[in-house]
Length: 206
Image (cartoon, rainbow, N blue to C red):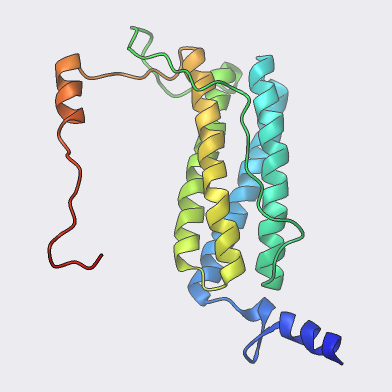
């Protein structure tokens, strides 16, 4: 009898089944997240045969496998309103964090005029955009989520979008495709010293 009560409790919150424990705004936002995730994975599949650089191909394959798993647990908890089959994992990139700073002259960027112009630089840009859109969409959905499980899965997956985008930007930087300008040393130092440490306001509690 006790086990039966526990099973019923796990599937209900108040008088509402957990699978229905979603606000309208949340449902629409998560719908967009899941649709965007499908579009991102389709993008990875579409461009894979055209990748030339082995390192970029390795990044693409690892990220796709991770995205597929994350999509499945998000869809699972969205459908059931309960914990997915496993917690959200953390994506681990295999590149170092070193970036090359400074600008070098090059050819102006412009849109392709033919599909035959596709190359690793263009492909990596598409993949990077998928993660940027994913981070924004998941953040917006998490802010509106009322189901606590869906909210947690969404918010835990946002750092993964950031990490995968960072990995691709590091690859682009290594190839000279993503350049990082810097301020003049004096301006940089001025900006770094512009903010001091905050002190607790007198009328605020400890």
